[in-house]
Length: 151
Figure 1 (cartoon, rainbow, N blue to C red):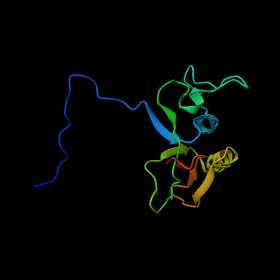
Figure 2 (cartoon, one colour):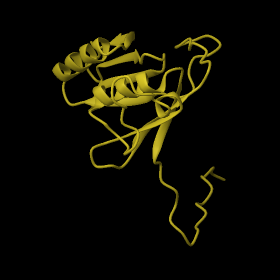
Figure 3 (cartoon, rainbow, N blue to C red):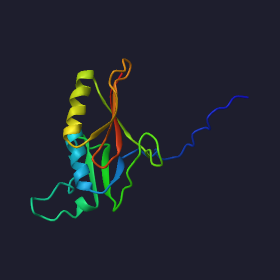
C-alpha cells in the first residue's frame, strides 16, 4: 500500500486565489514605503500618502500595495505591539517570509545594497553559494525576507 495525497475536492466554482500577503507592523506607512520603493509597487487607489502636514488615518491602520499590473500585492496592518523575531532560532523564529529573486549575482549585490539603504538589515549572507547565492534580510519592522538569484 502506498501513501498518496488525498484527492482534490472539486467544487462548481473556481478555487480561491491569493490576493496579497499581509504583514503586521508597528508603522504601516513606513513599512509600505519600504516595500513600495524596494519592489516598485504602487498604492491601491485611496491608500497613497496624504499631502505633507495632512492627517494619515489609513497609514495608521491598513495599506495595500499592488504590482504595476494590479494583481497580487502586499498589505500592511498596523498593530500596537510586534514582538521582535529571533530568526533563525529562539522563541519567535518567524511565521512566514517572502522569497524574492533577481536574475544575476550582480543584481543581487545591487538590490541587497538598495534594501539596506532603504532600511533593511542583513541577517545572513550566503552569496558565495555557487548554486543559489542568497541573502536573508529583515525589513524595517523585523520581518525576514530572502533575496536570491533565481536559477
